Length: 153
Image (tube, rainbow, N blue to C red; front, side, top):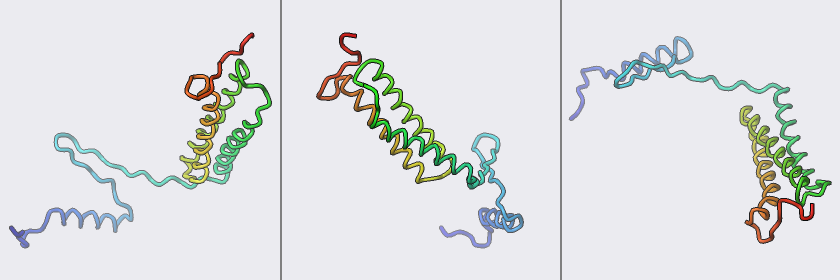
């Protein structure tokens, strides 16, 4: 059944009212959502994040660089880490790689820096791979078998 064009559409009136407010203020006011069985609630818009300062951006890249350097030097670990306390120290250092990477990824996410975020996430994967290389043989998942404690100590 076609609509009666002589009656004004209530939605059109509401749209016109909102457009008039937009033209008058330059910014839309928060919309009011009506719930079927309850009071009204306001929906507010969050302003876009401000651009990070030079200092904040330098701090972000310093965090990511710290993680990358730590992850790179883990391949040159100078102490024996086959078993015992040496293995515990190595795994602790690997955990620091992962913590530094997550710290950098969180900072990059807050500052909306995609490049640093991707690098930090790759560093998280690198830390997991370093830890898995030492843990998996000890839990029976790898083909070779290794022990947590040293024999004869």
